[in-house]
Image (tube, rainbow, N blue to C red; front, side):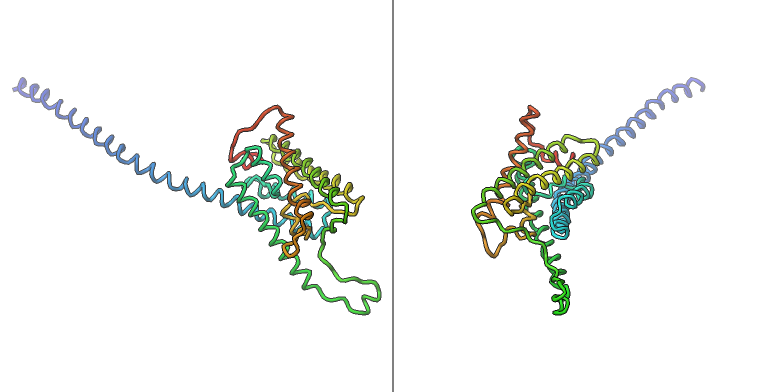
Length: 290
């Protein structure tokens, strides 16, 4: 009888082993079947996250341009105030879009293959729309200001007027054009330097803001000799009415739109030459580092 029990026990062991193998195989099969479903679910959020990132970058550029253009009008274009405003804007939206906030920066980055053409086009459109909205909002407040009475006018009080850039003096158009191009080139050098500072965001913001302050100061003081004005931002040029949609002036377009874009592109290329390198086309370079 003992011999029969031992034999039956030996016969039962392979059966248990087979059952364990079957269970293991079943678990592996279930895990293998679950893998595609998990990966397919994870792909969808990434797709929408990428689209949301681009849309968020456009909105950030729109907000940043609105803030900068509003400050330029309300502070009457004072370089120090505008420079500090740009420092704040870089700290606010820098992690979202790279805080270009200026078409000359966007076009210069695109020309040196740091961003794609699609992103550059979206950035420029957002910047112009933000600057136009700033013009509408600020002008609405100035138009709502109370009228100066005759008695106050006799006492020397003047009505509050919205800040405008000085018209280009006749015969001095080239000086304004050159001042815009020079200031834009200096500012583009500052932005290019800030891009290299990848670790300290405060240093990036200071470099961009103070670089814009220096550019405005040098170009502004230079062109003031001929009673002209500098803007160094084609989008803000619409806000301060240096360029108008109603009366298209060729020299105004050349000086406040074409000249800064040319100067900014020269500044980006010059920095790359001085660095002795040519950057590849990374669509997220500015967004990740500036």
